[in-house]
Image (cartoon, rainbow, N blue to C red; front, side):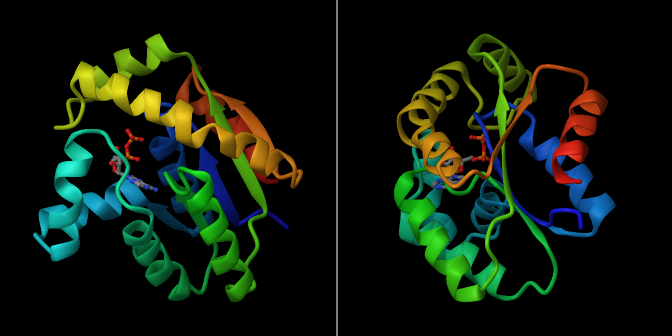
Length: 183
Ligand code: ADP
C-alpha cells in the first residue's frame, strides 16, 4: 500500500512545495503547507493572520500554538491521506504533532528529507520573488532552519521514519525518487 501520511522536511527553497503539489494531485491526498495556510490567513486579514504577518515578514517562526491550531483544525477534518509541508519546524511542534496524530490514530508513515546546499537555496529563493524573499530574510530563515528544524532529523531517524532525497536535480528526477520512497 502506498504511503499516504507523509511529512516533508528540508530548508526553504528545497522544492518541497513543488513536489508536494505533484504527489497530492496524483495520489489524491491533502497538501497541508503551513506557509500557504498562514499566507491565506494574512491575505484574508483574520486576527490570526494579523498576528502572523510581521513575524513572517522577518523570517521568524510564528508561535507554536498558533500554527498547531491551524494544523489541528485541518487534520481533524480530513478523511483521506495527507502530506505536511513546512510543519513541524522545531522539536516542540514535532511533539505536539505526535500527540495529535496519536489521538487521531493516524501515525506518520514516512518523513522525506530534502538535501541541498545553501548557495543554491539562496539563488532559487531570490528568483522566486515572494515578499519575504530578500537576501537578508532568506539568510535568516536558513539560520532558523539550521538551529530549530535540523534537530528533527535525529528525532525522526530514531523512529526509523527518515528517507533522504537530493533536492538539486530535475523536478522529474526528484519526483521519481520520491515515488520510490512512497511505494
Ligand atoms: P519557506 O519554506 O520558504 O520558509 P514557507 O511558506 O514554508 O516558506 O513559510 C513561510 C513563513 O511562514 C516562515 O518563514 C514562517 O514565518 C511561517 N511558518 C510556516 N510554517 C511554520 C511553522 N510550522 N511554524 C512557524 N512558522 C511557520
